[in-house]
Length: 211
Ligand code: 5GP
Image 1 (tube, rainbow, N blue to C red):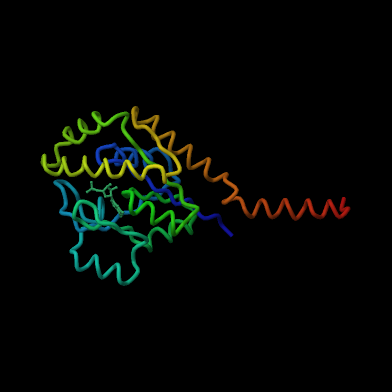
Image 2 (spheres, protein in one colour; image 1 turned 180 degrees about the vertical axis):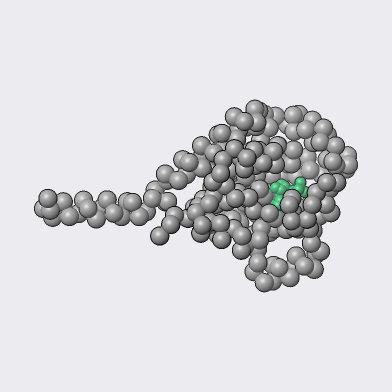
């Protein structure tokens, strides 16, 4: 049987740079598949349907929830965001490591449903830097920036639920660190059950006197 991939969640405050990190992980390594989320938010300039997100109506989103077509979903600053189930399952079964770039409520749901998933939280070195990056991005109005900063404060309360926290000071260092965490997770006993069972069985035979 082929090995299942690792389901990895990458979260971070809006403006933490997690989108850029994920793009670089996809370019640098070939073991990752990126899940494209469904959202009811309006596309930003330059965003394309089916590339950054599947942009859908509230009705379509709610219908997908009812059909159990999402692994998780959440409401973030007034819009729905969710992870389509089919692609994730298909890729994991094909042995690829799947990245979900999602916010904290969704991340906690994923952990509950898939305890073996790996939750990584990305943060800038400090809050001042976060605000600077949000303003510098130039894609949000001042009201939305305020909303996202206050959401970041709320999210900071839940960070302890993650498996790892990575500081995004230098982009490529951060990318390598996250890749390293995935490689480490592959070696956790939880994912080495078959190997452990095999060795245990062999040791039992020895204990019984086998040569
Ligand atoms: P943005 O509007 O900036 O693209 O995304 C807002 C937040 O929603 C980000 O924190 C992003 O990671 C999160 N997000 C994107 N897709 C999903 C998803 O499928 N599920 C959940 N729970 N959050 C998502």
